[in-house]
Length: 249
Image 1 (tube, rainbow, N blue to C red):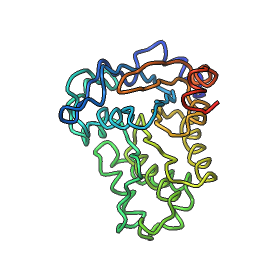
Image 2: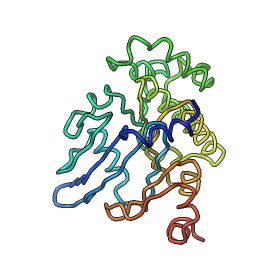
Image 3: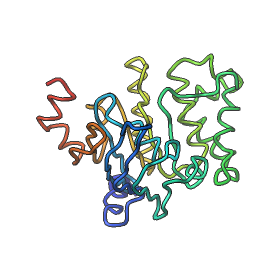
């Protein structure tokens, strides 16, 4: 089944990820105010917005890293709001964090092995490792090398590979191209496209708004902690408000 067909089929079913009225605070400062969104199985859904709009807070709250003050987060029909992050990961919701966050003094292999420590991933770890090396041949070449000595692009590939080792059903990407050279950005976005083509469900927060909207089946616009606009990626790419606010057109 192609990713397009998978997305069409999923649209008639319950969303894989459903967020309703999510509110997140840091002390007295509100980061998210009543955010609601859906991600259907097989889709790429982009979250776009200016710096400080709440995009990272959204991902971290869904992933169990930052607690929600109120609201609901359901993954595959199960309420996950309030669950610890390692439990959320073991349910199949993976995250590639902003800034890559590899373990610099550990080898490439050790970083990947950490990703497979989840109970859901252990049985298939050897097969998944071969699949990761097939997708990222440079990681195989540098398998014994400390992760901190890799280039920025290689570290991002390692972060994606480590997430894949956890056998996720949905991956949340938080600014995967940040700090990377333009050629490497294209490579990272192509990896996301490949994963989508293989049926992976993706939630994408990406500073390159035009590229993310081209990739996305659907997108949500987040401003000051609230969703203000949503639609198909192609439609939002042509929206005059998006052009003026985010594309400089």
